[in-house]
Structures are given as structure tokens and as C-alpha cells.
Image (cartoon, rainbow, N blue to C red; front, side, top):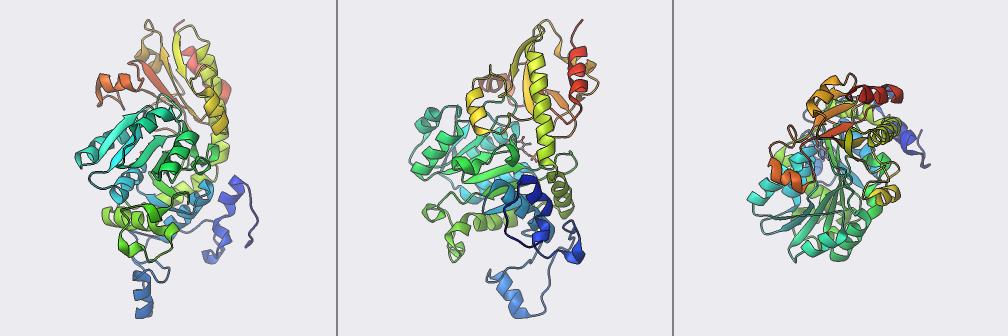
Amino acid sequence: MTNTKQYGFTTTILHGDRQKTIEHGSLHKPIHTSVTYAYADARELAAVFQGKQPGYRYARQGNPTVAALEEKITKMEGGIASLCFATGMAAIGSVFQGLLRQGDHLVSSSFLFGNTNSMWQTVAGQGIDVSLVDATDVKAVEAALTPATRMVFVETVANPRTQVADLARIGALCKARGIVFVVDNTMTSPYLFKPKTVGASLVVNALTKSIGGHGDALGGALTDTGCFDWSAYPHIADNFKSQPVAQWGILQLRAKALRDFGAALSPDSAHHIAIGAETLALRMTRSCANALALAQMLEADPHVAAVHYPGLASHPQYELASQLFAAAGGLFSFELKDNVDCFEYLNRLKIGILTSNLGDTRTLVIPVAQTIFHEMGQQRRAAMGIGESLIRVSCGIEDTADLLEDFRQAMPA
Ligand SMILES: *Cc1c(COP(=O)(O)O)cnc(C)c1O
């Protein structure tokens, strides 16, 4: 099947590997376990090492199974190139390690995944100035920019309070100022939203979540959308400048972040994630439908104080989310009224599983303030809109009626 026809999202993922010669007619890209790759001709070996000829050398910076997944992610995001990492955090860490230097300024949404919030503290300790802003409003982002601002970082839908960043306006602002715009697309996935459409320079996906989708492999990816002009970026090392400008960013990230720091994705995990990705569209459709049905039911329940889901008309960014995303995602959070014991409610759930992680086929539920956001303390939680009784729900693909009944029966009589 070698042709150049444009297929739909799922067809592209399913048949992408076979667009190239694939070993023994194998339907899946095989799992290549070799650490190193040999050449019969010493000149060829040298040419590969000097970047004059494509080829694998040492698996820390490239492996055929991982490369097949990288290509898949690039197609899913409509980008020009991707890099895979051992985890989503490694992908985020690599952006800073590879592109920022002491004295640079980073503007980030203050509504963040907990570990990314923790990473900003690390980054700040290394001499990079970090400003946290309310990214639901482009004016707050603009007000924070300084001549030293090199990068703006946002999540599409923030985990766990579901604030939606003002993505299109922030993208336009970054483009006008020549600033790298990094969008963490984990919560929406490329099936619901392609950050390239709002001018993102780099897209982060935690492959551990919806793309892998089964909670059986960790992984992360960075995609260069092709929107950013790397010729204007001050920190590209001279040795990458012999290559076409469009590749400068990804070449430096592969060398400075992946090769030097070594958070390489294992070929086994790449295989698991590639299999999971085949059903991303089907799973997202079901989990988004489940999230909407559950959020609507809980919003109407007298024991519930608040439900935070961008698919509800009561959500502050409901309009924005409807314009940007194909659906509002599989994750929401809610708060019970003070007279309902949050832990007792959780203990009465039979289907919802008490654990962290999200984007799994199973519905996962966690009290946020006491677990994943415990370390940051009450003050910072309050600033992020995280109440002490906030429950996060990552909807799986269970039958909708079973899920509704489970969350209903756990309410006090
Ligand atoms: C989980 C998550 C990450 C980190 O991914 P890991 O694979 O767990 O390191 C980053 N961003 C968001 C929004 C996430 O939900």
C-alpha cells in the first residue's frame, strides 16, 4: 500500500507503518531490541555519525520501533517531526534542557499538572525566570512578557480543574513576538485537538495517557509543528545549522535533550503505545460521552456543590472549548457539599477505581488535595482553584449506564 492519498485519522494510524517496507510483511512494526547498529562500510558508518546519511547508531537517540511511533505521532499532530521519550515528564523536561538558558524568561499557565508545577521550581533554581499567569486570558500572558521571554507554556485543558487556555490568541501573540509556544495536548489528544491549528511551535503528549490508553506503558512525545522559525532562535548550536532550518529545533532537542540526558523510550513501550494508538479515536469518543453524561448527572445532584467540565454550559470556557475541541475530553472534577464525606463517597464506588493516572480504558477516581496535589500545599492549591474536597474523574470506556449507576448509588440515601 504505497500511495499518497490522504486518509482519515484512524486509517492513517492503522496503515501508516505499511506505507514503508516493513520487515517480512509484518503488520506491526517489529520490536527492535538492538542497542547498536552496524555498517559494512566504514565510510557509511562515518556518514551516519556525521549526519550526512540517515541511519541508526546507538538506541539512546534513535531506534526503528520508536521511530515508527514518532512518525505516527507526527501524522496524528500534523507536524513535521517528533521525538519520543521515556515519560511525558521527560518530554517536558527536554524542552527546557534543550532550548532554555540561564537568564531566559518562561511564561507558563498557572493551571498545571502537578509534576510540571514542580519542574518549574527546578527550572527556576537553574536561573530561568518563571512567571505563572492565568492563561484563560491572553491579556495576562501578554502582560507577563519581557524582552527575555523565550517561551510560553500552556496545557489545553488543565488537569484537574479543566480551565481552558486562550489557545488561539496566545498562539497569535507568540507568533507576533517570535516566542516559542509549547502546548501540552495530553488532556485533549490529537484526536480532539491539533495545537498546530493555533500556531503552537512544539506539542507535548504524555503517551502514558490517552494515546497509549491502557495504563500499561509510560511514554512521552514532542512534536515540532513546523510553525516556528528556528532561524530567529538564539540558542541553536552551530553544528545543527548545516541542516535545513526547519530541522534545527528537533535536531537540537534530539541531541541535547534525548542523547545527553538519555530518557529514551524503550522499544517494548513504543510497541504497546503504537497498539493503543490504533483505537485512540474509538476510546476518546466513548470516554468523552461518558464524561459528559456523568458530569451532567452530577451537576443535577443535590449533594454536589460544583462540577468542572468544559462540556457543561456552566463552565467559564464552555464557548471557547466548543470552538477549539471536537469534544470536551474524558476528564472532569467535582466537589461534594460539605455534609457529604468525600472519602466515604469514594469508598462506596464499585466501578470507579481509586488511583492516579488518567486516559485509561477504566474509570479512575482520586481526591486531589490529599494525593497528587498534596505536596504543593493549601495556598498554591487555592490559587489553582483546587478545593480540599475536589474529586478528579478520568472516564474510561465502560458502558455509560453502569458508570452513571455507580456514581449515583455512592451518594448518601
Ligand atoms: C501525566 C501528564 C504528564 C506527564 O506524563 P508522564 O508520562 O506521567 O510523565 C504531563 N502532562 C500532563 C497534562 C499529564 O496529565
